[in-house]
Structure formats: structure tokens, C-alpha cells
Image 1 (cartoon, rainbow, N blue to C red):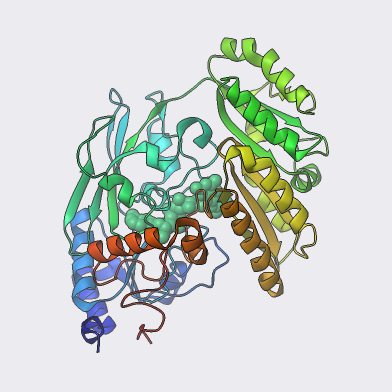
Image 2 (image 1 turned 180 degrees about the horizontal axis):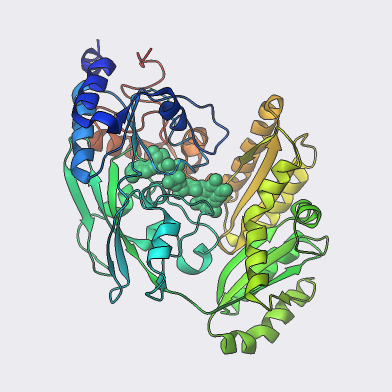
Length: 472
Ligand SMILES: Cc1cc2nc3c(=O)[nH]c(=O)nc-3n(C[C@H](O)[C@H](O)[C@H](O)COP(=O)(O)OP(=O)(O)OC[C@H]3O[C@@H](n4cnc5c(N)ncnc54)[C@H](O)[C@@H]3O)c2cc1C
């Protein structure tokens, strides 16, 4: 029998954790339920125990206990993930980072913040409000910074500020043997040694537990928002490309396809032309934006757009972006009892219009209504199905074709949500066998017992593969 399996002992680990962490280690049914899943469509599964560490040192102790008894340990941030990353598919420990919630320091002069992994992004921006700085990565949900690091999150602002990879300067990570490793530095750039920071960014808790993060901050920009409808989806995408090529500074640009515009017109307060729409935020001084507005309006008109409607008041701007935030929830509400299944592909910008159009044509026959929203400035779009349980097989087929289409166009299965449980089957076709083998080598080197979030990201392998799990 495998040495790991002979040492695996869930009961002993639970007893040791309860003994050491008292009330911060819970096996209560409601707590286990809260840590059984995220916002994805994947089946929920309870951990055996939830532990809430208060410090990096606590995390190191938990990891050592997990290692001693060879049981899985899955980090839980805010649970807003969309690929089942927090689901402890082999049971074991759910390590809840919510008490690693200290904003350790804000170095306004360096435009850097050091925060605990459990800090929520809205709390960070609230704490920054008097500094004139903000942290721009905005995945819609009020996610934890550790979760955002681990999924390689981005969102509406990425076109201007980049994704987590560009905005994380360093990390404190607990590795599989309980060592506390610090990566990166306060310097804005570095050519020193292997880039361990970026190895952990996007690793979804499979290589180590992030406990602290050094973040790059940015000055709060002056901005103006606007929206326009387009005769065609292709026209909308081309307008974005042309605006970017003209060097005009887009802070955010979001595509909303016509079925979703129709939902907005039925449910929201914003009145839009019944056409695919783009929501824009331009950054720069207001004078600058006003000077450029003629060029922007010309580009939109040349691509079949309606006249650009600028928001005149702060309230109008708020309404525009709240509408973008809420429109998918409205679409779900229109189909009572449904749940959502979002795809998350990203393709080269030059192929975006074609891939979106093919996707729209393909999903036209779907029984479950499908809506497309896109961070089009990056080539990233989500086709979101609102489905009932009996439609899962049908939707899985559409979702699979969306990924295959994106990979064939030179793109990726996941622009920002991560691989989690849902996209593992595409990893090899996207990266090739050699790259997967190298990823496996890294995983084995960093986590030889396979205790960190087993069953995620990489194809099944190692002591917790589906055939070797002996968890009851
Ligand atoms: C309405 C809605 C809109 C969204 N829009 C976007 C979007 O536009 N862009 C985007 O990128 N995402 C989006 N998301 C997805 C989600 O918000 C992000 O994936 C976010 O980064 C997850 O953060 P979290 O704290 O909730 O992580 P969780 O869901 O708790 O965890 C996610 C993964 O990270 C691991 N993890 C968590 N914390 C740690 C840690 N400290 N150390 C190691 N591993 C850890 C977990 O084990 C899991 O694998 C959206 C979600 C919702 C519900």
C-alpha cells in the first residue's frame, strides 16, 4: 500500500486541530455547509472540519498537522469563485482565511499596501479612501485578496490596470512542510531569481496557502462614463479595437449582448436601444476626455454605433455600472429556479468578434437562455446560461464547444475564473502534454503528499486521485 495512505488519518487530524484551535476549529453542520461550495454550479461537498487561523503562524501549524496525517487542506476565501475551487472533493480541512483580515500597512508614497489574505477588496478600497489611491482589480464580487491572488482574478478594470499578476508585488506563503516563505519585495520591478510570486498567483491553493499579499496601488483617476448601442456585435468589438489603437485611454469597457439588453430594459431603470451595447469608462482629466470625445464618437459611428450617451451626473454613472453588475442576476430572476453556468474564455482580440458571433449562433438552439457579457478590451467574454438541473448535460455540451472554439482560435479556457474542477479536461489541449508534465513536476516538488486542494487544476494524479481516495 502507498506510504501516504498508511499514514492518512482524518480522525486523528480533526482531534489534533480541535485540541490546538478550540472554537476556531469547527465540525458543526452549518459551518461545514457554508464551506461546502462556492458560487459555481458544481456539486457541493462538506469538509470534515473548518479551521479559522488568526496568523501566518497558525496556518503553518495547520499545514503541519495536515501533513502529519496526510489529509487534504483547501483554502476558503470569500467563496465567490465560479469553478468549484473551494469544494473539498476529498474532504479534510477547509482553511477559512476570514480572520487573516488585517490591513498591515499602507505605504502611500510607494503606492503599496500589505494586507492579510482574508481582507476583502471593498474593505481595502474603503481603507484607502483618504489616500487618493485605490486597488483596481475588480472581480464584481467582494472577494478576498487571497482568493483573487489564487484565481489570478481580473474584471472590468483589467484593460487599463492589468490583472492580479501585474498588481501583486510579493506574497507570504505557507508551503507543504509548514515553512513560511516570503516572495517579492517593495521594489516596483525585479530581475532577481525565479519569480516565485507569479508561480503562486493563479495556483488555486494547490501549491501553498497565501497568508499575506503586497499589492500595487494606483491613483484614483478622473473618469467619464458613457454607453452606446451597435447594429452588430462585430461593430461593437471593432469599435473597442479602434479606440484602443487610437491610443485613447479606456478604463473599462463592457459588452452586453442584445438578449441581456432586453433584460435590462425589462428590469432596470436604464433605457437602452434594443441592440448589443458597450458600457465605457474613459480615464484621464475631464478636459482631456472632452477633447478626445469627438474622435471616440466618430469611431463608434463608423462601426455602426448609436450616438454615445455620456452620463451627466454621478448618479447616472452609478446607475450605469450598477446595471452592469446586476443584469445577470436579473436574467436569472426571470427564470425562477434556475442557476447560472458561466463560460470564461479569452481569445486574441483580432478573433474576438468571430468567436463571439459563432458562439451566439451555436447557443441560439439552447433550451436554457444564454447571455453574453464581455471584458472586450482584453478579449475575455462570458457566455452565461440560466439553466434548470435537467438541462445540465445540454449546457455542458455548449460550454465545451465554447472552450474548444477559444482554444482553436489561440485562446484559453479561462481568462479569469481559474480551472478549479470545471476546466481540468481542457488543460492538456490548451497547454500540451509537455507543459502539463512540467506542471505535475512542480506540483510534486512543492506538495509531495498532494495535500493542497487535491482534485483541482491538474488532471487526477497522486495520492488523492479519484481511484486512490480512501476518504469515507
Ligand atoms: C457575481 C460574480 C461576478 C464575478 N465576476 C468576476 C470577474 O469579473 N472577474 C473575476 O476574475 N472573477 C469574477 N468572479 C469570480 C470570483 O469573484 C473570483 O474568482 C475571486 O477571485 C474569488 O475570490 P474568493 O475570495 O471568493 O475565493 P474563493 O472562492 O474562496 O477561492 C477561490 C480559489 O482560491 C483558493 N484560495 C482562496 N484563498 C486562498 C489563499 N489564501 N491561499 C491559497 N489559495 C486560496 C481556493 O482554495 C479556491 O481554489 C465573480 C464571481 C461572482 C459571484
